[in-house]
Length: 236
Length: 103
Image (cartoon, rainbow over the protein chains, first blue to last red):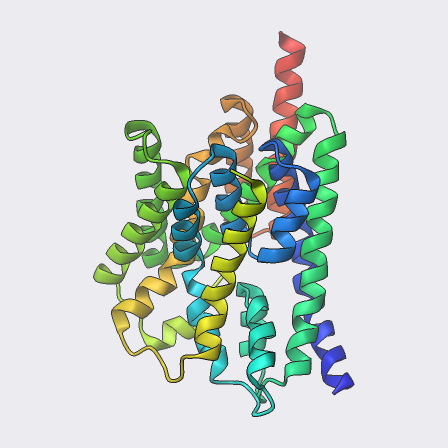
């Protein structure tokens, strides 16, 4: 059991390194949006998700409603439901309800990707290890980013706030280049988001993300439905 | 509204989304349409969050745009996330420094 835990932690190290830099960007962004260091770390420790947290911080900064927050998280994080669903088919019989309640917290894109690539059934101790190292990276990165955002000159902080968006581009551009279906969806979402921002400014940023993501995904699904096989290969 | 309320609502929503299927649902989603929507959502979300926000990220359109171009070029060549992110920030910082020197 201890062996499984250590194996999980080891598999989580590459994810941890990636999370360190993404969450550093998130920490900087929080300070940029006038949140405290404590709030920044508090969000990362309780949420463990990149896109949802960024959208959440924007809603907080804009003084949005709690309903907006719920809907926004629901749309952005809906994919986790599918990942949890998929992982639930791979669990070892020793996974009781308590283990499911704890491990469910740690389902992220990357943890899902590693867990689902394992050939044998997933043991609880393995999953705890696999979640722990990325969790440490995510929290530590946020703390460092928030501190950096607090002490560095405003010009540097402003430049660093591009980091997170740069990473988003690095996530979506390569698959969009290789796959026209993804490119189509990405372009619709971006175009719609730009139109809303400039032509319909009364729509807040949180709702805008909801509308753009749903419209672009539904249009993509209608025109280019994904086959079972493609779905297995995809994911960010 | 209190920041704690926001964070609590955010965390609880995100947690429930993850844990409910994990605990309750058995079997697979059959609908091809629904599977396709779920497949596209991460890309659509990231794209909508990035554009046009990235052009205003530094608080100045010129340096943000230079940073955006740097990110697009780096990502086009499939460079690692951290390289794309740092070059984007570096390009924006250098642009701000040059603009400050001119003014």
